[in-house]
Image (cartoon, rainbow, N blue to C red; front, side):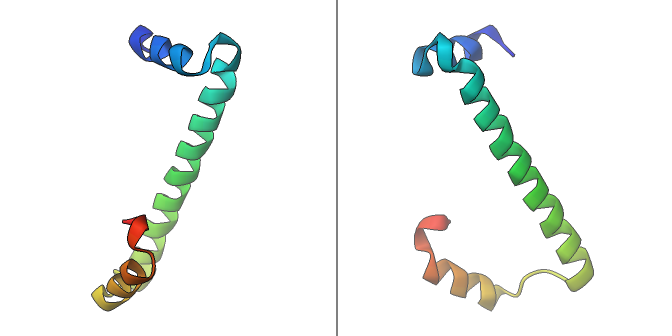
Length: 65
């Protein structure tokens, strides 16, 4: 990990919490990667999500975009 990034994390959480912070970040990234893979598989099998469904989802959860 680049030294500047390491220093930024340590300033934010302290030395004792560095490992926990990085573990949580890697866990979130793996979850996002798996969701992206699932999305690609579903799109390959069923085609893209219709625009009207995307608009409905955006209207229901405007803060998620």
